Amino acid sequence: MKSRILKAVVALVVPIVIEFIIKKVTEKLDKNKDVKDVKSIPSPH
Image (tube, rainbow, N blue to C red; front, side, top):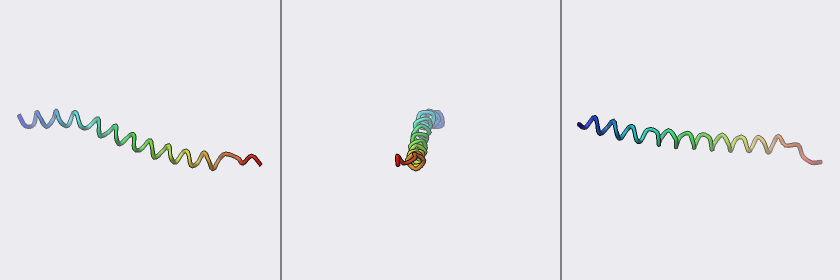
């Protein structure tokens, strides 16, 4: 019985955790991209 409850909890929690990690990683990648884009834009002079 406990193992069935445990499996249900894991099945609910794991996707949430994975989604959270993916969001954090994509945010970091987006920040790095923004920094690179700012540097790569040629100055108007």
